[in-house]
Length: 281
View 1 (cartoon, rainbow, N blue to C red):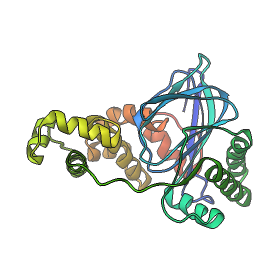
View 2: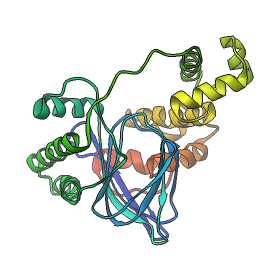
View 3: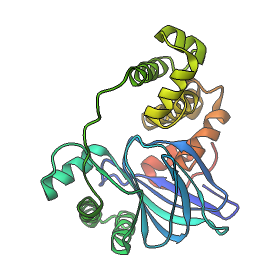
């Protein structure tokens, strides 16, 4: 993807399974509130990225890494007029758990405690993962990924405490999420959803936001994009994926996909196998 001085490459190196890679420079780009099923390690190399992490606005600049745990709502936009450049790795949760067990004897769910860490050496390791993958050096890419993960877990992370027992409102939020997941292409109204769950719209709206960090309609858009990604990975065309997840058409999918993933669905899909820049929807 390129245009107006912005560029992005979202790809996967086959010899580094369970990891997606993004190298991008954004100026006007604004990521909508969204989540990832993976972890996010974003090493800023130029400029400043600003992003809302839960309810806090934070900034990351050169030598710093933005760290986001799976299923954690966040946004993203330029923190300075010239924008920002970063190299990001998206390792899946199982891979991170495996590295935590192998290197630190941490067994269970792990995560990071701070959304931004000031660690130039770790940032160089993230960049090194990218460069090794670009050069086809599988040994270096895998080794550097494990080194940077262990370093950040040791200094900025650890085991994640289990969630406390859920309140009635939280249970209703979870039930509402299950309904939206099942009826993604034809969701009910908030009033209908609340009535079916035996509650009222505003308490459900408030509980949903407290549990998932975003209101139901925003969560649904994010869930649609995530499911569309899985369909694209399986070879479904963008137009077919748009309809399958409940978007009105391919341009509707393209708009929301680019605001969450950083590239249009067509470019994302083309780059998955060959690792080249793509354009269009």
